[in-house]
Length: 140
Length: 86
Image (cartoon, rainbow over all chains, first blue to last red; front, side, top):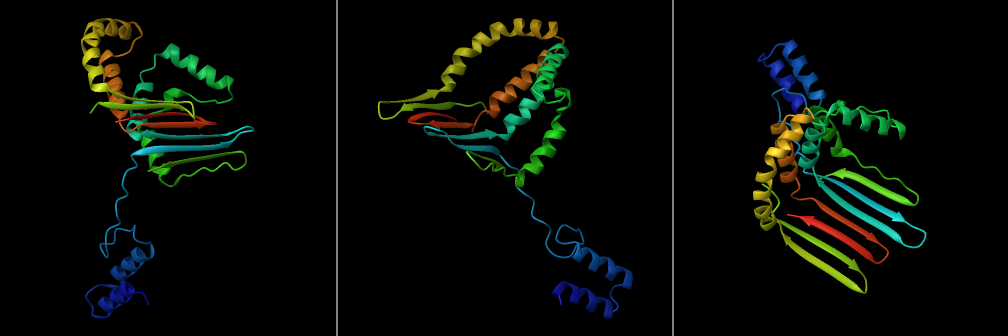
């Protein structure tokens, strides 16, 4: 039996907590370390990624091409802020150009809060395109 | 903090290799008076385009500061282009 679960049951047996409280504590334990049960160590805060890395390894017909790019996350954030300043006429041109390329996307929808969400998800992102070109995108 | 140094390297092995340590802080010192002179013009252009000039300048400044740590390296055949900003 899990030590913590045993501890909760002992507390219940000793009458230090009610059955309802015990149930809540066990449920919190089952939910894993993210649950804020007050028991056990707090989950470690993930360090914010500082860089976006793009590594491209392409096997060309004559010679391989390799690219290794490291972009600071701050640059992405600043870029999004700058994108918010695009004049409406220019924005329309950009949207039209994207649409022509088959990307139906409105650049005015890019907002700093969306970027933060995206960056959060980039922690575990790795893209590998097998074949002649291998691309890896990840954060560090 | 704005970037202070850039390292640029262009190589075409085995013939040539060009490496340049660019002290950007010297470049900023030269550009600063120029930017001050151009500031009114930038403001006018921003206002004509219905863009808040202060927001635009702040965003540009943030982009400039965020360039620190950027690194680009491309290898093709025997050629190499490398840029690292400190």
